[in-house]
Length: 315
Length: 307
Image 1 (cartoon, each protein chain N blue to C red):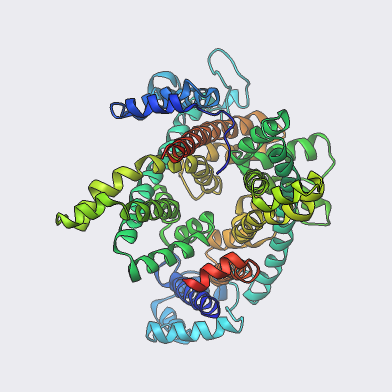
Image 2: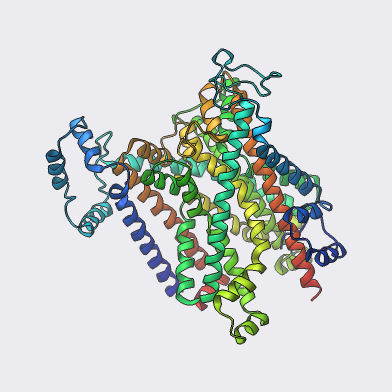
C-alpha cells in the first residue's frame, strides 16, 4: 500500500511540475507581450521606444535562458510570490486567496445541497423501483443534466429576484446572495448524484450482507440505515470530490452572471484584461486544488476500503 | 448492473441480433429500437426534427440573420417574424436557425475528432501495454482533473478566441472517456482466442487494431458519443456565452442568450428561447444515448444468461 501511495504522490508532483511549466510559458507564447503590458501598467502609455522596452526586459530578467527563468519563477511561486497584478498593482496571491475562499463557499453550498437531495431521493427511488416516484425522479434527473446553467441562472434571477423580489439578483453580500448561484450550480450535479445513488443503492440492496441482515429479521429501514446507506454512498462521495475539483475553477459562467468574486471570474477577467500574473496564479491554484482533491480521494479510498487496498497492493 | 425500466424480452433481442448483420445504418437501428421504447422514439424524433430544421435553414429562414429593423426592436411574434425581433431588431427565428447550425456543428465536429483520437489512443494503449499504457492512462487522469471550461480559457489566453480554439480546447478535454472505454473493451477483446489466432497467423498490431478491435468497440463508443453530446453542447455554449467562442457577426444559441441578458427584465422571451433550444437538443440526444445504453446492457445480460 505504501508503494501505491508513494506512486500517487509522485504522479501528483509530476503533474504539478508539468502544469506549472505550461503556466509559466503563457507570457512567452501568448498574445499579450508581458513587457509591453507591464510598461503600460507602470507608465500608463503604450508608445514606448524600443530602447526603453529593452531596458525593462533586462530589468525583468527576461533576457536570461528560459530554464533559469522558469526555476526562478517556480521558486517564487512555491513561496506564494506570483508578482503583482498588472491592473490593481497589488500582490496577486492576496486576490487569489480571497477568490478561492469565495469559490470554496459557493461550491460547498451547491454540492452540499445536491448531495442532501440526491441521497434520500436516490435511495427511495431504488427502494421503489418502477413506482411513480421513481419515474418522476428519473425524468427530473434527465432534465437537470441537460439544463445549461447560463439559461437556468437568468431564469431564476427573473423569477426570484425580479418578479418575486425575494433574493438579490447579483453580488456577494451575506448568506442570501449565496442561495441563487448555489441553486443554479447545483442542478446538474444533483441529476448525476441521484442517478448514481439510485444505481449504487440497487447494487447494495442485492448484496449478500443486506439480504442476510434482512433475513435475520431486521426491518428494511434498520437494515438500510445500519448497513446499506454507508456503502451505497461511496460512489456518490467520489463523484462529489470530482465535482468539487471541477467547480472550484469551472463555475465561470455562474460567477460571471451573478457577479460572484470567485476563482472562475478571477481567471476569466484576467484573460479578458491580459493580466498575466493573476492568470498564472489563478490557474496554478485551481489545478493544484483539483489534483490535490483527486489524489486525496484516491488515497482515502485506498485507506478506508479493504477491497481497493488489496487490489492496489497487488498492482 | 442497473436494472431496466422497460425490459426487452430475449426473443426480441434475438430477432434483432439476427437482423443486425444487415442493418448498418444508425438511423434504421434507432428506428428499430424505438419500436420497443417510447422515450427513445420521442427523443429520436425531436432530435431528427432539430437536425432537419437546421439543414433546411437557407429555405426556412426568410430573413437575413444580421439585418436590422431598428424601428421594430423587441416586437413580439407576428406572421412576418415568427419569434419576434431582438434588441437590434433582428429576426429571432432566423438567428435561432443560423445560430443552431454553429452550436450543433461545433459540438459534432469536436465529438468526432475526440472520438477518433480517444479510440485510437485507447486501442494502442491496450495493444502495446506496459510503460506506454501506464503513461497514457496517467495523462488521462491528468486531463480529467482539469475543468473543460478552464482548459478552453487557457487556450483562448494563448491563441485568442474563435472557432478553431474552441474545437481544439474541447477536443483536448473530450477524448478521455473514449480512450478509457476503448482501452477497457480492447483489453477484454485482446484476451479472446481470435486475437491469438490472428497473432499466430502473423497479423501486424496495426491490422489487429483496425480489423479486430475497432469494429467491436464501435457501438459502445457511439453510445458514449450520444451521452457526451449534451454535455459538450452546453460547454460549447458556456464559452460562446463568455464571448470566447463564435465571434460576431456569426452567432450561436448561447451567444444569442448572452446578448439578450441585459434586457432580461424587458424581454425575457429573448433569453428563454435560445436557452430552450439548447435544453431540448441536449435532452433529446442524452435520452437517445440512455436508450442505446439500456439496450446494450440488456443485450450483454442476455448473452451472459445464455452462455
